[in-house]
Image (cartoon, rainbow, N blue to C red; front, side, top):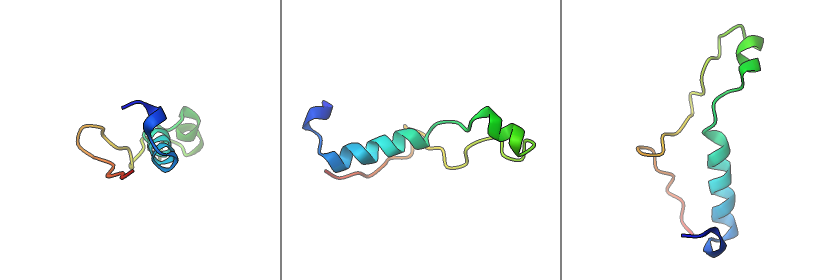
Length: 54
C-alpha cells in the first residue's frame, strides 16, 4: 500500500515505530562506560507486530 492512501495518524505511528527500532548511538556506550550496550525495546519486524488500525 502506498503512503498517499494512509491516514495521518497511521503515518505518524509508523514513523515513530521506525525511529524506535534503531540501535543506540556509539557515544551512549562511551558515556555510560558500556553499561548500556543495546536497545532493549528494539522490535523485530517479523515477530513483533504493531497492531495499528487506520
